[in-house]
Image (cartoon, rainbow, N blue to C red; front, side):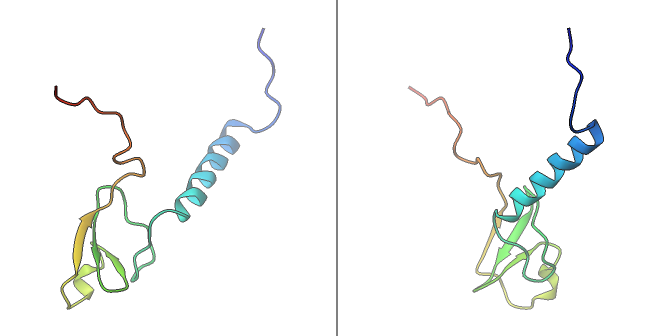
Length: 85
């Protein structure tokens, strides 16, 4: 027999999970120095001497970036892989 749910309703649960994910993301990586947003996974970011700039804000800078790379997910490189014999 199913127990009745006492606590969060479905919309409240979704909101809490979203809020938890946003707060967890705030501690990860760096923000764009121009617009302040977190670059998305798979987006190209440009690294200058002291700043990281997203692909949307790159045209505002005249200087060439020191480094350009893709934003990867947090677990990148931590998965188990099969190696060739």
